[in-house]
Image (cartoon, each protein chain N blue to C red):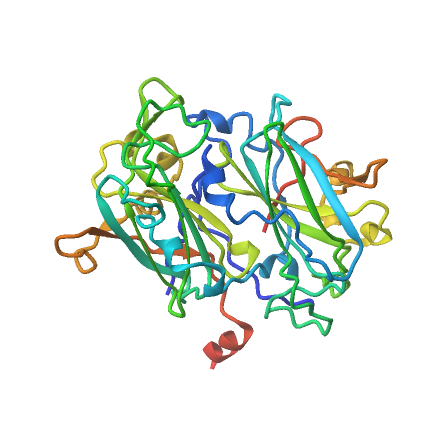
Length: 187
Length: 239
């Protein structure tokens, strides 16, 4: 039996009506273990203009590298108060800001652990279906050997790795087009 | 732990492309570089799970969220959330948003000269039951103009956002109404290349769930990505 997958359609310009109520700008409640990080950035269109009607959703493991999901069979510590889902809406300047913890490493496709990363989907007017990407962390030694990062042409890998600003904030911008176009995945 | 059971890729032409110039906003927002193909890992096959505790009763009834009843044609929209294998997707969060009966959204950037309804927000959500069933009560949204091209009108529609059980199943779509003459002129609807996949975005009139002297019902089933047979099932098929 096979049913036809429902086609994606754009969220349109009024996406905040649907997504605002369940926004999750702070992923890790107090008491959750791990290094606290703030990831901030902007989304730019092909003209370099900020996108003000986008939504970024994130999914991540806890600091022990465990997903709050029954399909994660890794024997690692689960924290009841940590779901691992984030959702932020772009502001009037196209900026977003997500507070969370740095996830631990999780099992990867080659039997080795993946470098710590956050799974990201992006919705906006003008996207008939969402974009899928990842955020990696700056100066993490595991990035070099990460199986997924190594599928990306070397010159484009940096679009997936946040950079550390002077105030400690992790900066991660999304470029939809142009020479700095962010790597988007298909899986 | 290297073997995850991945979700299937969609069939050819059943999903829109990112770049679809007839929908003008795609031109500066569609990625130009090829997507990087990657295998699904634990990070993609897992995703946030929800329970009925994440929503309230009134969340799925858009006609009771204010002091008075909203204007417009009351309707019931219900259906099932299934995967491609026909398996129900239980305990999944569905978010829905829409224009009011006049075709106006409660949003700052909606400049359409049509009245707002003080009794209508246009947002609802529900968590599917153990069989993947869902049900909303709302009012039928109006069509509205947009500036994509000369005399452009969006057919009446509901926006649906679905969380399955893994991030790879995430889907946002729109539901349309049967017999709407605007559909064939709508670039968003027409962006789905396959005729059958496109027509599945149109709900059907639902006599069984129509409430006498109260509200017309529409049925809309939503299909998320399914998985290929599990290794266990494959082995059994060989026998």
